[in-house]
Image (cartoon, rainbow, N blue to C red; front, side, top):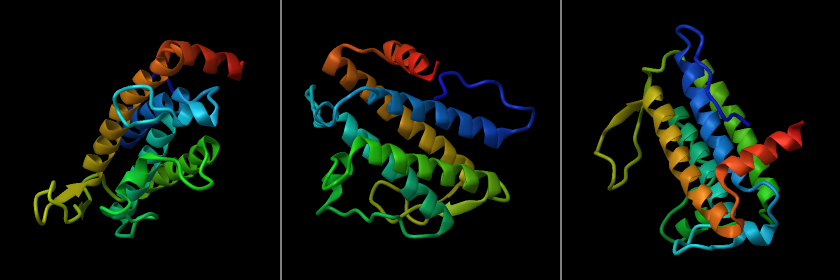
Length: 181
């Protein structure tokens, strides 16, 4: 998993955006290294967030935004009745299944961003009270939004993981490097 984003090739804005997104995904992915399902479901802080729930959320949010940009319905439609399930592993969902799903989502995100004619291409924001009505955003905005969303939750994941077993983000990078050696 990416821990440092190298300078992009001259003029490769898409590559730079995708690399920063991959870096932030790595932070969330590392947070579940070596955990049991029970640990991943634990809520060791004042928050209701768990690492398994964060993992599910970031994958679902990324898929939903890419679907919007493509003019397609999201894989999972959430409303007030089930919005809470976005942050909880349910049914047969596991950390491994969510990691695999997110890998697929990430590949589709990369393919979409690489294939779109221009980062300036726009799509409509959804009709929601937190968005201005009839607003359009660019694919560039989408990439930056996904980076921000994922980074925010990578920070949450750092705190939750450290609360669980004392492992800091730096400890997890070292573990990851040891596993890949």
